[in-house]
Image (cartoon, rainbow, N blue to C red):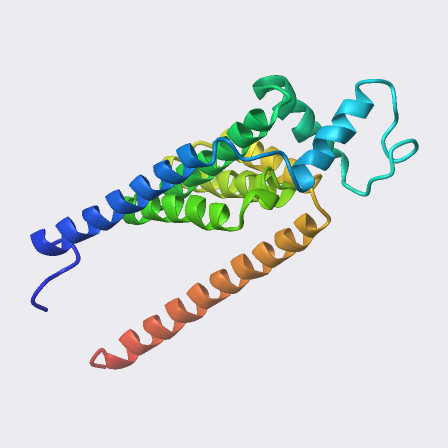
Length: 215
């Protein structure tokens, strides 16, 4: 092969692509700071506003979101404020946190790929528009990404104390939307299938090696 993945021309091109993606993500973040409060973010804002004034969710406030959604909205309003800019900052922090998790996951294998994936994730989320500001699915995605990242860190560094934290993040993600347990089931099925495939490959490779050895 004339140019490998890590040869000088290809590496320069990959770095250039990553730089452009990061620059586009930064430009998008700055240009979207004046987005108004619309969509589900405005609903969460209103529910938290009413709850802080004595009304009870589900009984006096007609809404179907799970408790974790209200908890995240309450936390966002107390950390960043209660205006449109506060919710925009909350959304951008979630996007940055997801990008960091992707970089952590891919770091031992391809650092540029992880950084590029994070920048691309921010841009794709931004493409959906202001109606997707502060979505519960975004927070659930961030929590599950960090659960995976911490689990991989525990396996790579042999630090078991990352595992309970990963479980706590995954558990909180399930309080955001009913689709959370379905994602957990899918991940368990994928892990089981991966383990079975590795066992079959190891058995087949070992059998082939023994068969090729002279008797």
